[in-house]
Length: 359
Image (cartoon, rainbow, N blue to C red; front, top):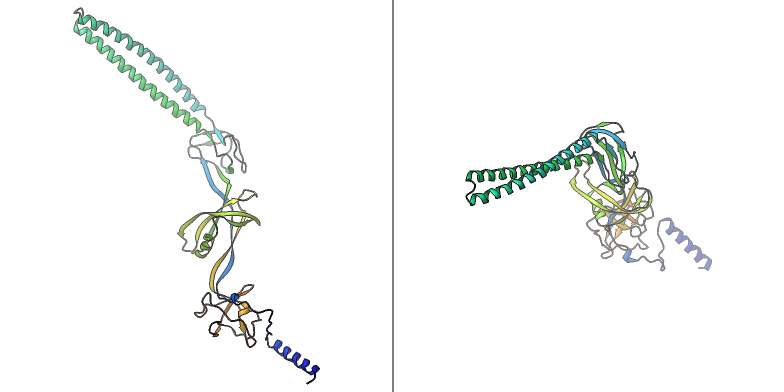
């Protein structure tokens, strides 16, 4: 056979192998056996939620009256000024009256102390006369009774003063309730009254929120929750496509029978962007799924019949393809293909899978 004839025969042989999907082995591209391993299937998912304030509070009036001044409008940040003040005219009049009553009682107390001192001195003088036999016993008893009664009156005035002081403190505390304050740094979400409006006790005044600390509520499955808990105490998220850090704030153990999910809340730890609600937060996770992962390069197919071969025994195992990733096929569970099973690399007699698997 001439050299030209040998070359032509080899070309025809190689072309035939290519047509039937058979790949020629290469000494420089041998399969790495450690890569041909069956693995549990997993999938990449993205959880999406929206930011909101960590705390929202509605402030209500504790007193009745007319609104005199409101210092903030919707969307403004609370500063040093109070949110609003209610007309304190009537409470001021009560405070003034109570103070005058207290002054009068203190004057009465001073007079009573002076009277007690005088009667006590008079009793001691009569007591000395009685001991010398110069004064009858009845006079001494009368003087003693006068001292005791004066001391009782002094104690009664002291009690009235204490009552008036408590009344004054109560009025002053009620007056402080006429000025409604909110935590500094919080934001007015909704102003519920206007200047000049009459309010009563328990009337809602304003709704404020703490946007310094943003949270993201999520509803997750048990597998998704396990994947989140496997992350570090803090993990990466995307907030309006910008990188941020978050952590789990709380997990509600109550199970929702309708959605079959659990409610959790993430709290943002660091984010340089705007602090407001409605920002889109995305958390990427890898969770387990049904089926197994096998490397694409370990699967061979002939006449749409995908299968793999076990490295240890060489046994053929037919597989049902459920899906695929970049480098792996997702196949149905098979008792002969447990996670960690080593597969055999394709050979000359085993065409490699070159077609797209059916989902």
